[in-house]
Length: 153
Image 1 (cartoon, rainbow, N blue to C red):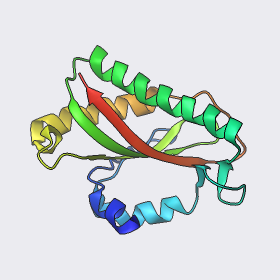
Image 2 (cartoon, one colour; image 1 turned 135 degrees about the vertical axis):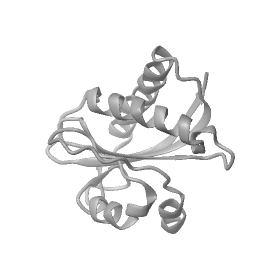
Image 3 (cartoon, rainbow, N blue to C red; image 1 turned 45 degrees about the vertical axis):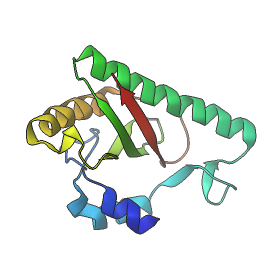
Image 4 (tube, rainbow, N blue to C red; image 1 turned 90 degrees about the vertical axis):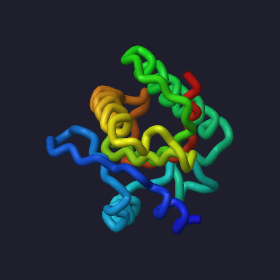
């Protein structure tokens, strides 16, 4: 599964300012492995591997994650980006809920995001969204979460 993830990651852009999110392409898979080790999973089975591991806590975080994806969808729509895509995301958050790193991968082999013009516009909007977005959570450590966003607009 990990190999599939690392092979399937298509984008991960770099932003060279301090508190801004960073995104790299899949050629930086080794960098992603380094990053992964520095972040705890958001949701898991116990406190050694995850921040949220009790039913009530995982439900609360799940709702925050769904809101994150919904807000991203609204941002794209407000900026006239029309998507018919399912995207896999791996997001690395600071302890105050800001996005530090964001990976995405279109799940369709014939994704419109693979075309240079569409990819460039999508990445520009994704970068702007990631720079301005903060989930409503504050913790003592950085964490990561992954999931699929279904953008049917």
